[in-house]
Length: 213
Image 1 (cartoon, rainbow, N blue to C red):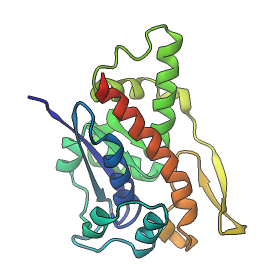
Image 2 (tube, rainbow, N blue to C red):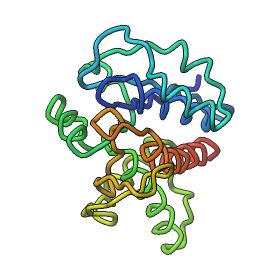
Image 3 (tube, one colour):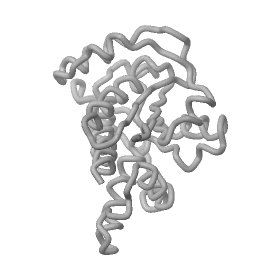
Image 4 (cartoon, helix red, strand yellow):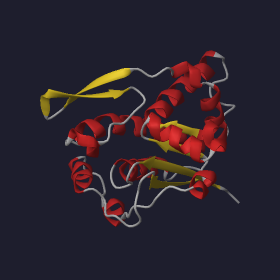
């Protein structure tokens, strides 16, 4: 019997970044040789809040199937959810630190989304240079273990200034490991999804490759 790999995506309120990322990630890994369940939660979430309308609009603009997003309702993160996950993805470094304080044993499998994307690319390069390809990474657990072992390859993070696509005169200060919160005062969701979408695609493709081995 094939066991299910669980991925937990966490943001602040679980109405915008994490449900969007979870929906995209689930679509990237569905149909592989193994089962992956992608869930989401929020560090400061209340139970049952409806998804962000701007997030739904951004998803529709990208021609995504929004049925799962429309049905989504927020929920707070918990030790049980974190403990059950094989991989925990958070949106920024403070969120990562919060999760690791909440459950210290999660440290080795908790990453920011952008950090995970960089690590998945780097782990593949390291394996290629060593001549083993990724043959030794038989499961998602193996992949996560290698990501943790190679954390130093992609660190430390650096400050980053993002241009707002539809308002090119504006810039948002963030970090190369972080996905900015559109509800944190910036008012425009486009920079958030401009950095979130490529990262979550990379993570999804990395997980899908692990499932095919």
